[in-house]
Length: 490
Image (cartoon, rainbow, N blue to C red):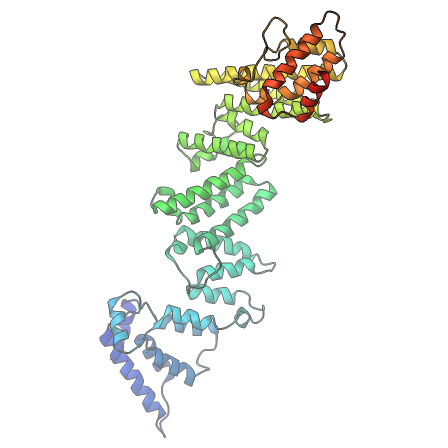
């Protein structure tokens, strides 16, 4: 009689019909009663074991384990028995019928709760068998806890490496996205974020070693984990998963891009990315363009101006690159005017970079009229900044006459006696990089005028023009030092 029932259990994956479960449970109960009678030889424990597995009755299972505590010699045997009696009570309708019939099946959550009553040291024998506990967790469906335990296991066996690759394998199949485990709350991060973080952290170790190409592979796996696994690369995941994957992917690609050698890895030795690894993850050229411009902006925010310029040049944003150089040159000129010792080398390098951008622009042959206008504007700003730099250098070396001659070439500075006084409105169209240099430039101009002999009143007239110019700029809140110098002069 039992053979057909066992065959049904095997063919149905352990989900026998309510009728079969009830019949086997009754037979199991009969054997237990017969074994308890005085004078009986006792029941066949192995036969009872099979009957209890097929019936899945919680009460009979608990009684069997209570009466025969030495039934299993290893924790593996015990665990496999427990797994064999687990029923998916949240799934099939037949399982619900069994519950209504009062047989109370044994659920996976019951198993997990039972196993988690014991500390990890109980399973590992205080560290002597370190893999037993994660083995128990994996077999009981507590995959995230298993991976987390392996990650934290401190040993020379490299279990943390196993944890990473187990994470990748499980995440690639979307296991964590489906929701697993016994309901343990591992902090504010959900299962997917936790696993992605483990993979990402391992990849960052290769970043610190300078192995960016290998780090890229782990970073890609971390992003895929956020997106639901391998299907996310082919668009077979939800919209939210795609968004999460792309968000992390761009973040991690930007991190690599900012590292030494990152641009060459992602974009190739030349060009905008057709030869690099970026096209694997962002095959669309427009998407690449937007990503790289955003990365360049982040570089500027982080003070990595050289990186920003290199990226902008790669995507053909020459005007933006030159604007970045001009902004840096303006700051360097200001530092030089305030006595910074490294000002000369810094300004020389920036001027070289600006000229290099202009050469690259000519070589690229960009035909956009808007780009040509923007380049022309930034080129004028670069030449104006070069002239301003020359004024500071002449004044610093005591060549005040040469400094004033250089100043006269700058049409926005009121040193031409034949032109009317400038007003604040006249400078509104100047690039911001040039405007930032004007206060220091006027201060140097006044110093130069103080050190030149006034033979015909021209110097006095020029000082007055500068004073009127500064007065018109009062709303600009220029440095107080400049206003004091003007006041002393008058």
